[in-house]
Amino acid sequence: MGRPGHSHIVAIGGGSFRPSARQGSIEASPLLRYALDLSGQDRPRLGLLATATGDDSEWLLKMYGAFRDWDVEVSHLTLFPMPNIEDPREWVLGQDVVYVSGGSVANLAALWRLHGLDEIFEEAWRAGVVLSGQSAGALCWHVGGNTDSFGPELRAWSDGLGLLPYSCGVHYDSDPQRRELLHASVASGELPMGYAADEGVALHYVGTEFIQAVSVRPGGHAYRVEHDGSGGAKEFRIEPRLLTP
Image 1 (tube, rainbow, N blue to C red):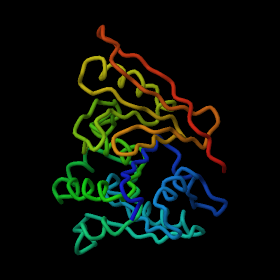
Image 2 (cartoon, one colour):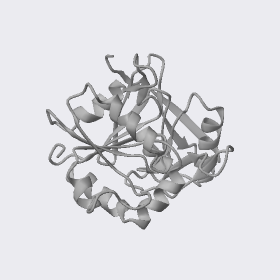
Image 3 (cartoon, helix red, strand yellow):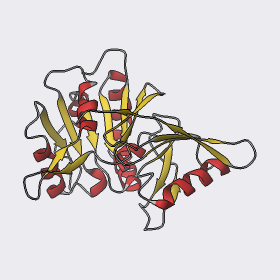
Image 4 (tube, one colour):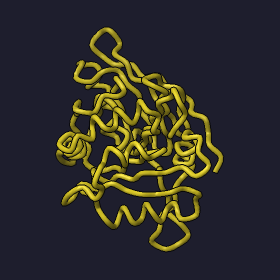
């Protein structure tokens, strides 16, 4: 179950999956191979959660299909209309890697707390289960970020699990609202300093320390966003390590 003594989080700005040659199918990108490799297991156990999509069965099925050619043992946890697993804590702690899909991060956080998954994930993280996810599944591990959970106009949101004491920006180069709002939220103190990722880029943390960014897209970047000390925000570009296809 992960590497003893290490707590990994891989927060993906976008690009976990890409279209497959099989019509209507998707395949997992090297960003997910990167997360799985952190487990140190030859055949890692991968747990999928699509809470942020309301446990959409079609999306879960597509995610299963994305790993059809990978040497990985896939299972999932749903909460609608009731948990599909008798003991969610045992299931989470039994995974090597957990992947959380995008969707509504506000709904995800509320439902996880209702079912005690916030505490379960913190226990799993400390035990060495690699936590990963895209968009909502990246934001949730942080203090917060900006989200369209409440409508098409983005809002700052600071009700994340807070395993990482930072804000998080996702889809940073594909949605023009994202950068401006994250800067404003950090400048005002509504959100703490944090990290952001372009499409195809992931943020890798060990414990609560940002270690590096990785990318599947040349030209994709990560960023550190801080208060500038005079009522504004400043941004530092981080060059990611490019993963092989």
